[in-house]
Length: 465
Image (cartoon, rainbow, N blue to C red; front, top):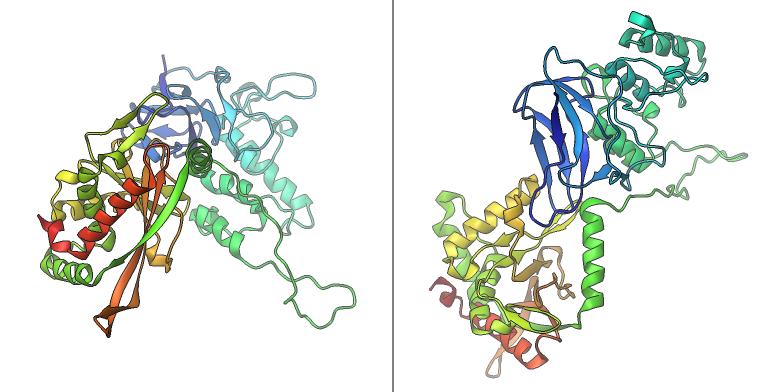
């Protein structure tokens, strides 16, 4: 019996996932422990390795949404008979936003392709893959393998013959050269014709980077009738659609649900940061040899954790029948990625000394950008800190990460003017933006919490004890 390849479940709350990319082509060989496919979920992406050695058969194509535990393929051991047709995937499989509207089959053509006379087509897995890459209809090919089976050489010969017959074989309509699965997927999403993309991979293979470069490359200007000026300054870019999927779809849904289900208000409060700036500089000097660089957000997270101990109403969840004041203090830190915002969580934040907190936030931020966060890194948050100060933002309205009841926005540090009696003094100030759920607590206790954060940052030696 072949070994089933499952859609791995990561985290208790995972309800669906997508095989974003098959690392092993259909019909290819895989060794135990070798990377098999890349899983995309609403929170994290994860590389999944093979549990055994053998020949891989894909049951579903890339970009098909499945449920955790669904079978997405098989691994056949050496000498094990591999059927031409695989079982159809479960009814739960639906195309994601990134797939086309055509019927979904496995990347090896798990359903038999039909000729005009309804006869089944027998083709090797690699022949099916090559035919798809070069947009060739297997029904038009003659098989030279045993029993008329279509093999790799038949597809290559057919492509060569088609190119020779076409006078514009090298033009915009030419068959596309070989490309990686993720390059083809990205090209579909961005509306890029692979026939016009130059591959930089081995043997001219088109890579993801080639497609990205083609997407941002300026289009060649086309002369309008009677136009001899060559002026293209008035040219406009064509519209393109970006699918709402994965992390972006999850963010969109949760932010909308958050605003629809809560009474959210935002207040701002100024903080004099002169002493905090000096403390950070001293800590950077102290920890320089270890390569640890504390940030202003680290100071804010530490101040938030200490303030939540004094104001448990802000470290809570709101239910229909009761408000739950949470015992643990786990502060989430929003990290901006190209594909969206992700919020890893500093567990037991209130119990971490300043140095340990800096080490943990550094680890989480690095793992978020490298795509190596684990489900445990994303769970259990009781309050969130979101920072836009690095973008020069003075104030914004962060949206609460449900079911929490508060989120704190951190803005830029700016030069400002204060007063020492009648004498003006230069100060460095920062605005804090607190959004809270008015169902859970009123404005006065919310303001008291924010004032506690401010007071800790203005006397930051208390963050070290």
